Every structure is written in C-alpha cells, then in structure tokens.
Length: 290
Ligand SMILES: *Cc1c(COP(=O)(O)O)cnc(C)c1O
Image 1 (cartoon, rainbow, N blue to C red):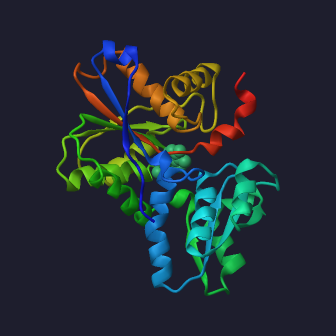
Image 2: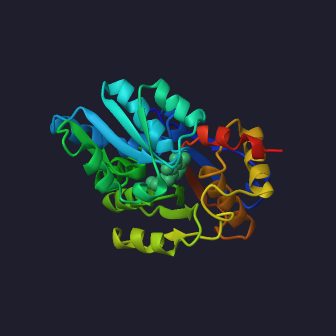
C-alpha cells in the first residue's frame, strides 16, 4: 500500500494576525474510512503476521473504534481474515456496519472479560495456531515503528508538530522519528482523555527529548464533548473543507488555536498538524451537533 498523505496549508485570519503559519499533514487522505494513524500502526503487524504464517488477525476495540475499522479494511485489502472483539453488549452503528461490510467477524465481550484481553484471546483462540493478536488501538512497538515513518515524509523545517493522543503510540513514534533525524521540530501532544499524567510519563520513558504536553483540552474526558468544541469543529470544517472529528483531531486543533490566542508560540512560527483521520467518529456524534 503506498501512502498518500500530502501537506496542505490553511489560512485563518486569527493565525495570520499572530504570524503563525499552519500546515496539515493529511493522513486522513490515506483512506476514506480508515484513521490515518491506525493504518500506520497496522503496517508492521501485518508484516509480522505474514512472516509468522498467520492468517487470522484478532483485535479489540470499543463500538466506535477507529482501530477496528482500520483493521477490517486492511484485512479486506490484504486478504486476511479479521475478528474484532467489541467491548460491551451487542450494538449496531456506522463503524460496526463498515467493519462487517469489509468482512470482519464481530464478537461482543462484556466489560468484565474485556478487561483482560490476553486471557480472552487465549480462551477464544488459544487452540487456533493461525490467529495473530493485535492489542487495542494497534499500540506497542510495531505500532510505534509505523508512526516513525511519518517524520521521514516531512521535508520542510516546521517549528512545531502537533498530534492528538489516545494511547500515545503515535506521539512516541513521532518523537522517536524526530530524534532519529536530529530534527529541531518541537513535538506538541494533546491528550484527549482526562487524567493524562500517566500518558506524559509513558511517552517520556520512551523518548530522550522533552516535548510539549497540553493536558487541558480533554473537554471532560474521552469521547466527551461540549457545544464549544462542536462549534469549533464546524467552524474549522466550513473554513477549510477539511473535516475534524470531535474525539481526537477536533480537540487537538482546538488546543492549537487556543494556544495561538494565548501567545504560546513565537511570531513567525510554522506549525504542522498531523491529521490522524477518524472521520467516521464524527458520524457517531452527529446527534450532538445542534
Ligand atoms: C486512535 C486515534 C488517535 C490516537 O492515537 P494514539 O496513537 O493511540 O495516541 C488520534 N487520532 C485519531 C483520529 C485516532 O483514531
């Protein structure tokens, strides 16, 4: 799979006034339904799976999981059987519909048994040698490896790079990629969940350089939202034709604009925002847009 992820400049008067240039790396264009970073996180898992002669990929996610959908699509493209273990009681929504459309088999697991995923995998598939385990969200060392490659695709010397953060895998990949390249670009990480101090520590353990961590833009927690955030998502989308989702990229872009307003960045700074995709997540929240 070749990766199509160009960089686009966007213009906003409030950024121009602060003398900030904003560029977006369009990982959302890698695939229409697949979150860009989920795609990158799967790449080395698929390779490892092939090398180990496994034919069935088993992975985990919530009912709105971008990772499940990315896995389902990757399975269809590469001819791999995919099984998605979904947290909670049986439901139906756009994400799960698209998963099944791409051939993923869904199995629902109650919240209690979902907690210990390795045990659950062992119980369900321990006897089946053809199965390959991928953790929730495609996290872990192979996921990091795929995200490092984002940095190799960047040729301009931006001052800052921004990303939304769930498990921290993408942030670690970016940080390690910057280190490998001895780049001066400063990494800015916006966690989308509350109580994210552990994430900051987790990332720092795996990278040498300090990075900017902005924990104040979670809007109440994971998948929580506010009218202000939804208005911002709509505003940004209508001004650019580039959609954001309220779960990840909307929060990270809101943070960027708010930090600009506070004078956080030196004038003449250029910022590259990594658009990690996640657009189907917007459909899951359509009822909340008034
Ligand atoms: C999963 C996801 C993230 C979070 O990536 P992590 O590597 O888990 O931190 C960010 N943006 C989108 C759109 C996602 O789907």
